[in-house]
Image (cartoon, rainbow, N blue to C red):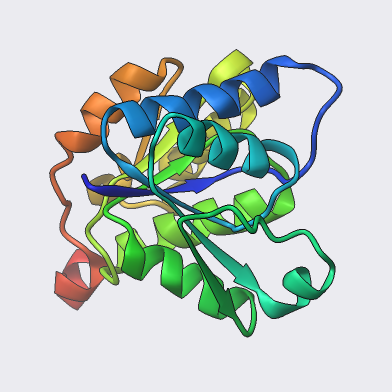
Length: 193
């Protein structure tokens, strides 16, 4: 993996562990010579990932909608800053520019990005690893809900492993690098669905 899209919050929670985690992600990716593709913001966890990666000598590619640039939240120090018209174009750029997806704690926008990466993998729009860093148990309930969808039958057995979840960053990156694509829905026959 040469480039990873990092999905995370633009907020700065009161608990300092979240910003520290974001900085660790940025530094670690830069140390591994993996470029960061992210939302292009300078605030919150997004800014912490970018700043740490840049400080460690890494490449940081921001993708930000024009409306957020106009709100002055763009990170002007990125190696590259792509300004797009809206959120759909932003998420498409994340997919086109990256070799995988890494989600760390965040809010509604982060969830939107994660689930789109999962959905697109399930369908077959991409065959890239979708990693979830479950630091501090932040995603325990999300992972339980994902298991529930599998148990009920809304996620097919072939797709139950799309989300690669770990609590430790190094292990998660190792598993993402070893990712084996699954059979997407587009390659299945109607009788398999």
